[in-house]
Image (tube, rainbow, N blue to C red; front, side):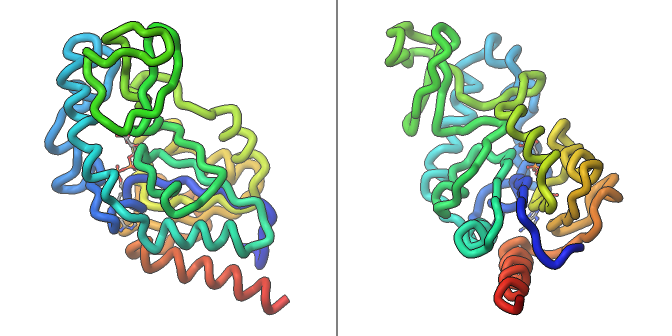
Length: 239
Ligand code: APR
């Protein structure tokens, strides 16, 4: 691991929001234990039963709106503000906790729950309230074509050109709170490693195929990430 970095890229997953009280996907009481992916996170499910899919995301919203960023989110913001490097956040999360932590350079590759996309005109609209099959698109005025702006399994991820450029040009890749079981995000560390970045993983436990990481920091991200950020900042002040 180097002593200082010029371009740092974070990949965050549901685990970074766990200490804000939000459910992850694959823990014991995870979201995928109470709903089948096939019923709520595929385009086929949306066409077959749009209201069931809308209900799944609508029911998440109140908890998401009330959630507060935790020390892990705030540590990334502190790094962006105080460390002399370009710091970017690629997130798999659809919550807005990185934004609430006043971070910048955030790329929601799996979409955002506070948005919906019109399947008629393609317009992406902010939707803090419920979206249903009666919702009218504010842009083209067509009803019933609004889909949560969530990337369903089998759909293309968002911002992938930017992601590719970041992975090839960063000198530090930091994975936080992701099981790395969903591709292509699971393999981002390989690209970063291939192009010469130092790589570090923050998780409660070791994830599979994690040999691309130079370092593993076990523990709650709300505790481990602030320590890591303070360590980087102390090296700047020492130099
Ligand atoms: N600190 C650090 N890591 C944590 C914490 C915590 N406090 N709590 C949980 N974790 C870790 C878990 O050990 C697990 O490895 O976070 C990870 C959460 O994994 P998942 O629930 O699989 O969530 P994620 O990796 O974000 O899922 C990726 O799968 O279903 C899709 O679109 C969905 O974006 C999601 C993607």
